[in-house]
Length: 301
Image (cartoon, rainbow, N blue to C red; front, side, top):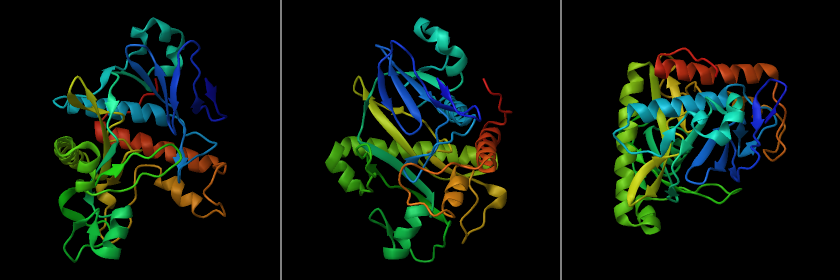
């Protein structure tokens, strides 16, 4: 395992286990009958993995996903257990892995990012300003930046190859990729998950502005996979700070993006080193998202 100077886990190494993928945040290992997902503390911005990690970030992402999996367990998901000590081959590394890892079923991931927007912000706001539509869905006039949409929108994108960017597609386009039946299931599941999470989070003082889901197929069923409703896959806004017509404060890595925008940097690798103040504030935002959503104090494993 490799940690940086701030004790953020940057990368993992588990001898004897095949590394399936080292993504921007997760290291995935093949356990034979299942997969091990390890959420490191790596941080990416503008599709570049930065040299500094954010302490506790991977633990927060995993613990929030586990919270949602439990809250919405009526929808099948890929989780088997988060206790790595149930596997003999992982016990020697439990001190590093516990709290930031999930053992999950092997599923055939469907090639779509299932994005749900409840508020008009980010690329959706840009599209609306340009053409009055988002992903081919025509919207009424009168929305402002960060306005709550009359109804949540399902705006899928393709899953790009490594190094490329996902591309937004219409629902009809998604039907052409995976078939109309599966596309309808993904849409309906995504909207149900978002609405459940939105209503719950509102009671906790958080607005879920948008989020993205991934689904896979297992034994003929579509099941929820990957991370769920975390600060890396969603925009979380503290409700007390929300103002329509502005870019709301987010409980995620937007703080890092805003800092990077002040630098003379071409947004290509290698990324710049982050000041300690930025790292600490970003870590605090992730932990605050966990505390507000779950109502629990964050305890590092």
